[in-house]
Image (cartoon, rainbow, N blue to C red; front, side):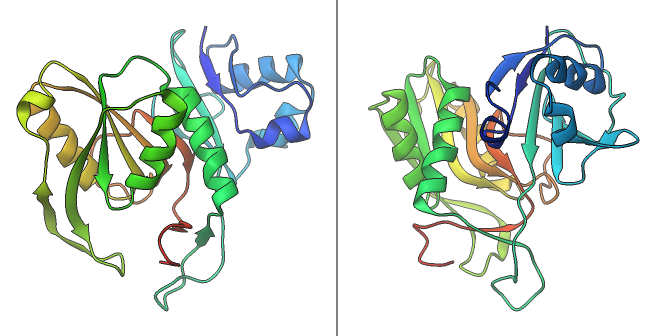
Length: 245
């Protein structure tokens, strides 16, 4: 039976809704219908008349984004249903959506991420600089004490990427070989940085799992997707630990 990860906001709107659940169905529409039968009102929150998926709702089947209710799904598929985030003016003078994340919101997002990634890991690998704070918060929730650091430079402070990720510091191979490594960053934007880190872990003989707070499917330029993410957005995300950047 397909696994379904629902937005936490639904629980506040419809009593009893579970964040992590399962529902029968061979298509996205059938799964939503099954959820609505269990918790009346779910379909109205996710779909418009027609019917079709609402514009502000993102649906991912096995990491692939879809807006089709007739999208077929395998019995063992995982479906993420996530509200898109909108904002106001951009930070660089261009017109761009902006999502300003408070500490309280960040704590909630990391809590949701912890529910997804909970499992057995030998170490966590935090990507600097942005991944260090979420990684620390996540490590407390998961009880992980062995935290490694990958210092990687790719974007400057205006969000402009360089030609390729530059590794300034990376764990030695023996710290990774044969170990289950949870790689954590704050955002998957182009995806270039975290994919480069993942490849380095694999080359060292490690077993990587990726987890980010925000996933930007519209900006990703790599053929991979994060194993786990808390929310999807294409907005410029401003975290409380980045001094307004």
